[in-house]
Amino acid sequence: MDKLFIVEGIPGSGKTTFAKALADQIQTNGDEVHLYVEGDLHPADMAWSALLTVGEYNLLCTSYPDLVGELERNKTVWKQYVIIAYTKIHNLEEKLFHYFESKEIYDARTDATLFCNIHKDRWKQFGLDATGIAIFECALLQNSINELLLFHCMEEEAVTDYIRHLVDAVKRLNPVIIYLEVDTKAAIERAARERLDSNGKRVWEHGITQYIENSPYGRKYGLHDIDGMYQYFETRKQLELRILDKLPIETHCISIDVTRQSEVVVKAIEELCHNNRV
Image 1 (cartoon, rainbow, N blue to C red):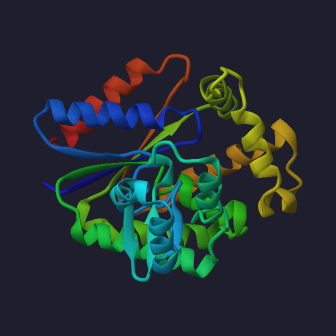
Image 2 (cartoon, helix red, strand yellow):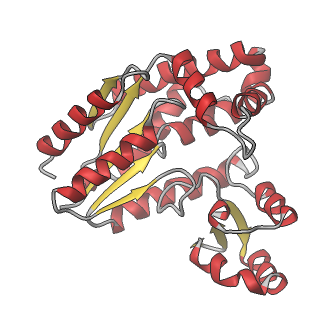
C-alpha cells in the first residue's frame, strides 16, 4: 500500500514526537515506513538544505576531498542544481557551515520563482515515485507557509492555492494530514524550554523572535519581541486551520494539552492506524 501521513502544527506542538511514535506503531504492525523529519535529506521538502550549482558543488568537492563521501550521501540533484542537507554532515568547520547557510533554499535566500519551481517539482516527483508508507513532519504547512508568508508576504488565497497544488501532486498516495492543535503560548514556552544550546541555555526563543521581527512580514506588521512572536504563530496557526478546511483530503485536527500529551497521542495513533489499515 502506498500512503503518506503528514504531521503538522506550530513549534512545541509535538510534531516530531508524534511522527516518530506513528512510525513506530506502523512498524509494530508489520509495515515498513519511511520517516522524514525536519533537516533530513528529504524527497520533497528542502528545509535546512543548501542549493548549489553543479559547478559550485564540484568546486566544493575539490576543496574538501575528505567530505566527498558525506556530501554524496546527503545530496540530491534537481536539473542543474545540487541540494545538500548540510546539517546532516558531521564536523563541518564554521566557515563551511556559514557557506552552506548562505546558500539555503528557504528564508528568501533563493529567488521566489526558482524556489516555487523546485519545490513544486519535487513534490510532483515524489507523488509519482513514492512507494510504501511515508511520514512527513512539518513539510507541507509549516515550512511552506513560513516561506510564503514571512518572506514573501503572500496573501491567504495564494498561500492556500499553493498548498492545494502540493497536495494535488501527491494525491495518488491518499495523503492524511494530522494537525496537532495546541495553545500557542504554552507550545512556544515548551519549545523554548526544550531547545537549549550546548551549555543548557535557552536561546531558541531569542533567535526565533529576531527571525520573525526582521522578516518582511514582521517589518510590515510591526512584530516585535516575544509578543510579536506569539502573534505570528497564532496567526499562522489560524491560517493553517483555515487551509485544512479547504483541502480535499483526509485531515485530523487533534487538540492537545502540551502538559498532558501522551495519552491523547497514543489513542490518536491507534485510531489512525486502524482507520487506514496500517
